[in-house]
Image (cartoon, rainbow, N blue to C red; front, side):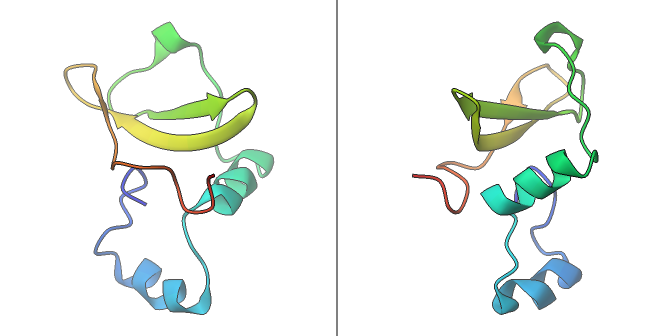
Amino acid sequence: MHAFGFEGNPEYAAVAPRGVFAGLDFLGWIIASGHLIGIGDNAASRNDLVMYVDGTRPVHVGRVTADGRVEADFGPLRGAP
């Protein structure tokens, strides 16, 4: 949720009570739908999303900051083990 900027978003707040969450299922959907394009580690730049995986399973997402670090909320995405 944090990496996608959904905090405080009224549209997200409206659908979350109906069981729609920015978790692993959502991440799988945006990948399968072609909304995210993979790039190499060295190609990441400011505001790009960074996905952490356990093998091939996504477990967390962050966003690259201006200084090249990754900002993410703490803990796994909803639905992660």
